[in-house]
Each structure stands twice: as C-alpha cells, then as structure tokens.
Amino acid sequence: MSQVFSKSPEHCAKQGGLTIDKSYKKLFFAFSSFFSIVLAFIFLIWLTLHPAKPQFSLREADIYQLSLSGTHLLNSSIQFTMLSRNPNKKVGIYYDELQAFASYKGQQITFDSFLPPFYQGHEESNLLTTSLQGTGLPVALSFGYEVEHDQTAGRIVLNLKVNGKLRWKVGTWVSGRYRFNVNCVSVMSFGPNAPTAPLSSNQAAQCSTAV
Image (cartoon, rainbow, N blue to C red; front, side, top):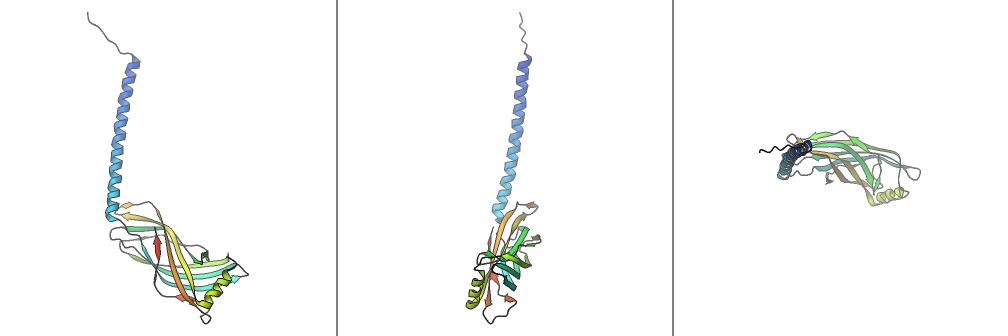
C-alpha cells in the first residue's frame, strides 16, 4: 500500500518565508561587503595622500579708524591682505563660508566680513584682501584705557582672524566639510608721534591654522 503525504498551506508558507529571508540576508551581506570595501579604499587613499593643512601668512594690515563714541561704543575701519597657500601636491581645497574679523585683547572690534568661496589647486597660492568695519560696536569700559596704554608703550597688537569650512578634493572625490580657524597677529607702531591714520604693518607674519 502506498502512502501519500500532503503538505498543509501553512507549512508551504513557512518554507517560502525562509527562502525570502535568506535572499534578503544574502543581498544585505553583499551590499555591506561592497560598501565596506569602498570605505576602506577611500580611507587607504586618504592615508596615502595625508593632506597637510593650508598655510596662511599676513602680508599687510592697516587701521584707518579706531575711535570711541562715548565710553564703550567703538567705530573701526581695518583692511588686511593675507596669503593663502595649499602645500599639497595631489590634494585640492574648496574654501566655503569664509568670514573675517579683527579682535583686540580678546574683544571683537569689527563686524564679520564674508569672503567669497573659492577653489585652490595643488600647491597654489591666493591673495585674500578684505575690509573690516565696526560702527557703534559695544566694547568693555576698559577699552579706552588699554589703547592709551599701548600708545604710551609705542605699539598696538591686533588679531586678524578668518573662520570657515573647507573640503579636500582628491581626483573626483570631495570630502565633507571641516571647520578651520586662522589667527594672524599684527604688531603696529603706535607711539605719540605716530601718524593718526592709517596705522600700518607691512611685515609678513606667519599665521596659526587649526583644522
């Protein structure tokens, strides 16, 4: 006597479900492996090239106005020129969202000035010039005393700063955005016999850069 076995619909559904689950797992594993290989390849390129941070130096700075209205409202006008250099032989740099300002003894003495974004090729250099203004800018009550003290000492020290974001470019690949900060120190003669305006510094000075 022959025996006939029949499978219930519920049993077939379970087997079909297992087959679909295995297919999804294989697809997910293949995609994960491919994605990991791509990331490892990009990371290997990054380690091989190891891009150096850009270099900045201050070329010229001029103070056209630095005066108080009342006891703590400052009017300022400053212009400076900076040299930006990309030291990398195989990595380009996109500069985005650049903003510059001046500070004196830890106080910001101008409003932010925005510079246009630009691309810097391999081992390329660019001159950046910007004008900084401040009108009715609140400062500490000790500001006037500090300036008079510096005038007696014969010099004034300003910090000229640029903040922004950059992206590295290797071939057709472009990285995400990284914040960077540039700080340039400008020392100007500021004695009792110094000209009223502009106070100038034409000595090139290396700037510190943090990325």
